Image (cartoon, rainbow, N blue to C red; front, side):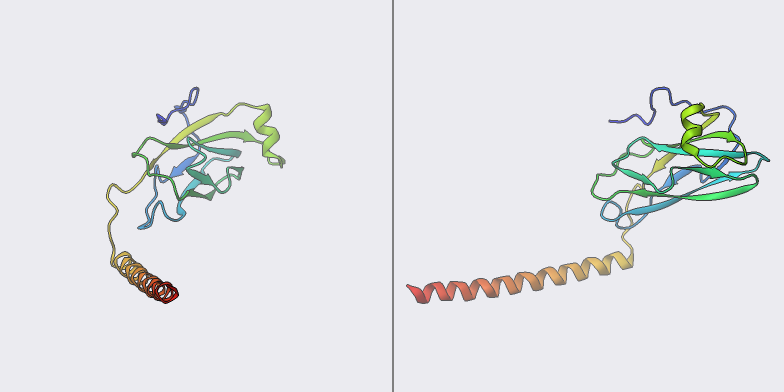
Length: 173
């Protein structure tokens, strides 16, 4: 089981960018069944331009829509983060997103070449959490009731077909 820390993945004491929220919580009443979205805002309060890179402790469980890019001085960007369906929910604070940055010039166009030639200047972890208890909302209850009705109808049709088949088999004897 992952410990949430990667070897050599140490948070910086000085981090020039501002991350909001400080903890990502994936909340959806159908979490684990559908993609669940959360957003991370990266703000650059400085006069410098940076390139950022975001990594996660489990790439099978989470997806990052724009893992690399640039952030101009005194601006902010919003990054879409996704929890992938079909995987059991882990305990809280086991996984995290790591946000790295490197100062770059205003003319830089290719972040990949910067990341291959330089080491990151800062790193910050954003812990990942899930709801402790999935609250059954009225909408969820209605969806469950509709699912039950549909299942009963399918069973009824299936039983009727089986009855017809059984009758046909009885007639052939």
